[in-house]
Length: 481
Ligand SMILES: Nc1ncnc2c1ncn2[C@@H]1O[C@H](COP(=O)(O)OP(=O)(O)OP(=O)(O)O)[C@@H](O)[C@H]1O
Image 1 (tube, rainbow, N blue to C red):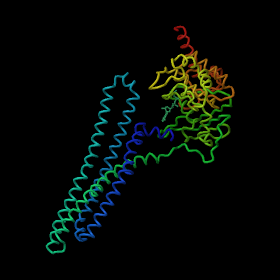
Image 2 (image 1 turned 45 degrees about the vertical axis):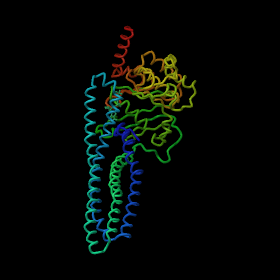
Image 3 (image 1 turned 30 degrees about the vertical axis):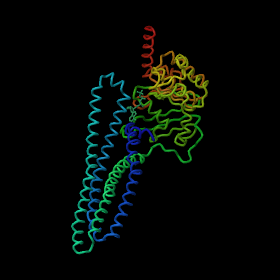
Image 4 (image 1 turned 180 degrees about the vertical axis):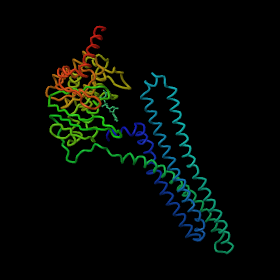
């Protein structure tokens, strides 16, 4: 699924669909069908015996209350359906809240928001309890109603059966055995009630899961898509792109081309649209006016696999998995050798840091392992992208957490190792892009300045002002250090 989907459905919600809802559906397929078969066979056999062995008229009378059972099950079932849907939605909300609270625990603690968070959690739990109580209330109504219906059957049978005995249509013995047959109908009737219960729960969950399964991704591969990884010149022409549900265009009139082996720098204020352009190159969104081609073909002509094989991406918010550093670096392909992993780490200037850990490359990352610094995580993400030696490397503000010296070393490594390959660097620190073949400056989604570092300095615009400011800051930091 595309990004729009993951923005619409939150993690906890998706997990609730995959656990609670699937359980309810599974119940229909298991216990539900078993109960149905059981009630049908036992009930059917008993009714046939009543007709054949005792009296068909008495059987009809005993079954008069049955339509009542159908009506009750229908009415209660439909109420249960709605109540169960609400309770499942409440469970999704709790799941979301739990997931967010645990993930954001550090922030909650730092801002002293534990009490407020617990309060919010309690409110959500209380809401779920109210909704679950309603489900259980409706659930509990089934049995008394069925008992009532069976009671009516008994009463009718005794009254009419008594009349039949007086008329000598049936014997006392037949009436007694008929009443015990009704006793045998008790379980099938309860079973029908339970079946409706399970069915309606499953139905409510099925609606929720079905809605999810019918979501369509907007990024669709062409049937005869190119399977060969993209390679060559990257050319981007975006007349306009607006995020789904937004009204105003986020980027407009973007036009640039990068020859194989060249580097493009993208700079600009925060929120000026740098990441957005990169997302379009990564084909995270397909709906824009314009044309992006890579190696002479529109990126939409490639299979997603072929396009992604050509691109190495280091996002702004790097994410490492709970596995060893080595496995994190060779995430794209576990067959990379230890030498290749170390070479990539060397290029990302993280090799020495990793070797200094007691367990070296075997160090576990994440919840079960060491806490890495922001800069270390960032450089491991860079190594992870570099190891595949991609045709196009995209660094989205990927050097923000390293110091100027480390940045210089990484950039110089990239320059040597990636002579033949294309690189896009988006950054706030202008020194990251100063060696690029072309630099574009964005403001409110439009290119406002472009050229080489020297040309931009001569323009004396935003780039020059920022450059001077950052140089001054670097000098002050240098003298302080
Ligand atoms: N998924 C989204 N849906 C709607 N609007 C978005 C989405 N992602 C970003 N935006 C908006 O698009 C604009 C450009 O965002 P973008 O992330 O491209 O900026 P940026 O230049 O990379 O910023 P920064 O330097 O802070 O990373 C911002 O106003 C942002 O709020």
